[in-house]
Image (cartoon, rainbow, N blue to C red):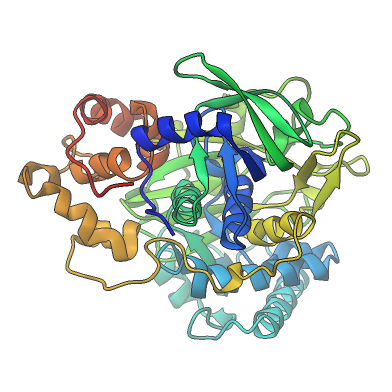
Length: 504
């Protein structure tokens, strides 16, 4: 095994080396699926290169609801198999792969005037079936407690801003919540690198087939041919750019960011049904740093896909209006601190709502010999990767037992924020302040991120631009004011790295 640290120097070296070798597997795409494939293949002993035209987690993988869920909504559509797969993968993530990044999240459906007794009974029954799937998936109650009914006082305690009028209690279930979806992707890439995978960002693919790809270094303009015994297209919603035969029906999901104080600092996620639509809800999901993510819309996207979809005012209004139905005091546009939108790579199906399309995945081989991974969702990325690599080798997969960097190791003293986001590596991150104690201070007034986090992003996590730091290593871009305030510090971190973590 080699070191897990990604640096600008290692990236440049790995790009140059791709010209003179034939790798077993070339992965195109640096999202959760592509990084999952790279780790699976490298951990089986295959030589692997991953190329990504922008940064890690640049596309869909950073725009999720930050949930690792057991598929409760899939039960409502009768897809028990997908729900069980989700429950199993959730358990693997929470107990082995990334227990430092995934935590149990209580989720409450308040039983108010807009929830009839029949609807409440159906939701409760679905929760109990989901609890059964949790047991089948061998996820203990210590990891995820069983669902139960709440009285009105306990519902208010968990959700201080909930609408009291007609409140007769709530239904509580538990799911997994990611500290940060982009952090999961970076951890996958770094762990793959520790098994020898070459992780090369800002490397765009000009053309590809089953024998390799023509790749351009987006930073220098240099091009080279990468030869491979197998090629996996893991570019998600953009898969048809390399594999025109694929059939996807992308949809856009929009979230808004609110201050947690506006919702009374909730201790659970608030679930509010969308009026007039069955099995459709808006969620207010509490996160660290005093914010709440509210989502999400689910609308089809037609035509060329943008790298970063725009958020429209009517989408923000829909989320505010729907969530306000469940609150004592309605929300206002001025409450919104930020917003974000992402594209889901849904498999094409029958006509109807994209919200109803299956989140199942497929692995297909084109006439040119290139494999393409289609569909799926963040929770089941590991299974998607396993299915893809199973087509390439008979060597057994063992990623169900493989922890990511930060998941295991001695937990030495470190600031609580760093422990929450870096796990066993928190003390290493804090150690970057040895020469400059100011790096343990926030990067700007009112901003929660510490200076060492920017330094670690450059020295260990492959950040090459200020945007990489603000948008994916720290997620400061999710709050407009934080993004603006931290910009100068991010540019300084790129221009003057604080130090080197270790030889990569």
